Image (cartoon, rainbow over all chains, first blue to last red):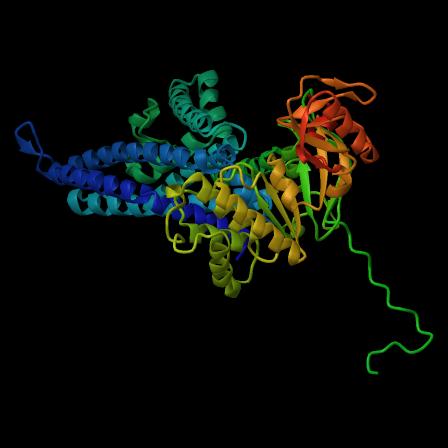
Length: 282
Length: 312
């Protein structure tokens, strides 16, 4: 078996053995159950003494789904950071890496194995949880996102961005520091993205540039906005809501060029992680 | 006879076997600190080689350079004939780090399987190798226990089993008995002797000088990043001069012979030739000492160690 697969299997097995997968799935099922109940109540809501019209109920469900998915994107981002932070730094700090890296395995194989062993479970978690949530909302409130697969892909890619960044940081920083830095960067990019959206809404090129730069620096918010576009009703894109810079609406989907940039960014950051680990003294 | 070379034919020349380890001016600097200062070392194959030195002498740094875990800042070296950092050669090297830590959430058996896979052992050999490893280090019956539940001594035994997986040609043991009780140390010595009998080279980095004295064929003493002595153990320890166990001694020096050095009841004069043993005994009796035992000329490794390091 290739050393990359050996390390990837070891990494994924650790997630299972440490009951992290169990805990995450249990909490997710609870949250999905609660939100499902909430969505099922939307068609029964009254406005001015009358039941919501189907169109209004549809919009309310879409808006609530965006809020739920925003929380989910936050969970994905934090999970990626907390999983990746100790994956390399923990082994280096504890000395486990001494015995492993003295074997005929390159540091690139070690890092790629770690990345793969975290990325596959993370993507599986995103796909499974988001699919169940979308299905539940469709059944309970009658709303289906226009591009559910696109939304899942964008959320998964957002997780990969933060996972890769944390792995790169953990080749040089302690596990705790790498995790905290990623979480701060994640939050800062989101705030910069919101600021950029306001800048666009008010035609302020300087503020709009903040969002553009943040989307290039660490594309987590850029991908979250891609997820929003895939989840929101098409009417939101042209509505006044997106024009005033709401953090829960997007005026357009990601361009092919931006998706290619994200792929290149991922390759660059993982490559940097390999170089950084390779040059590090163990 | 079939296979016999015809008369006049050139004799078959076997390629010379490279030493297990050779280094030339190997240097490692961490910022301003010189951890290893031009290490010149040659470890022949099939021997147990002791690598000694005080704390901070550069022993673990040297081991990390040999295994490619750190990069030299100067000089060069070869392990089993391959340059330092060569990846394929590491499948023939077993290593027990001084800081022995294995994934606590794995069972001992799973940790060994992991290292078999990392070492590239064929799948069909893994099971037998793992069971053999557990048996050799006395962990049979504990293979399914989580590593996290092991005592330090048991974790060190597991580390030794990890180092012995496959058929290594070189085993590097960095302080292999630091967490072991006397029985465990005895077991490790037996394992090392067995490895030597099997033709495996053992590079033993240890603080336990008595242990080194018991199992090593050759030693190198390193201090402040440099080798201060290197050679066969017998050669290094010979020439100690006579030692006398006596009581009632009231003087610290003897006329004609010089200053006395002591270790408990044992006394000797540094540099005194064995031919002058009767003179030493006579002089001691002359100053009122009662002589109980006389030993000829072999110093303990500890004495030689302190002498070479110029420590009192």
